[in-house]
Amino acid sequence: MKTEVSEMEERKGKGEVMSGTLDLSALPLDCITLIISFTSPRDACRLSLVSTALNSATESDAVWESFLPSQFQALIPSSLSFSSKKQLYLSLCENPLLIEAGRKSFWLDRVSGKKCYMLSPRDLSIIWSDTPDYWRWVSIPEARFDEVAELLSVCWFEIRGKISISMLSPMTHYKVVREVLICNQKKNDGDGYIGG
Image (cartoon, rainbow, N blue to C red):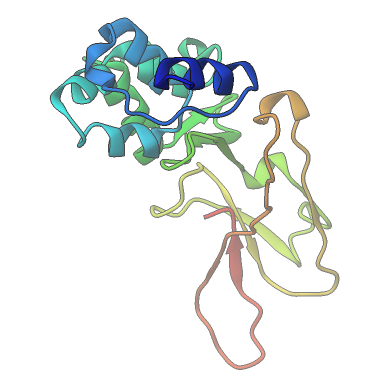
């Protein structure tokens, strides 16, 4: 006759999953912090609501530093300071930084923590952008870059951009979005700004 203990040992030997519960709060805080650092920013925020132990772990700098890109310190201007890595993370999600002499804008996706970039119009190859009959370079207050390209007349519309693959997050699908501000819209008028 099998006892309950011998039956459990037999099932364990066969690699069967054991049922039971695990009280995460019984683990050391460093262990909980490490586990949470392998999740996502969204999961960390959700876990913070489960218990005080998980909330303490999710507030740690170790968790939020794991969601920041490697070498993030090089991107942060020395004039900015943050009281925690979580505050830094949230700031990078909400306040894009101009990098590479103002030719690119960088921020983090709030949910996933993935890197996002916007190329300035000067970082793009715009066909005939140096031809005053078709394009003009102007500054507008609502733009994130110093200059935007104003389309005056359409003859041939072609824009190309490049970004180094080393800047991107691995194992990530990216999309390309063209940001255009339409202004002075009249019938058959092609005026608009590239790079708002």
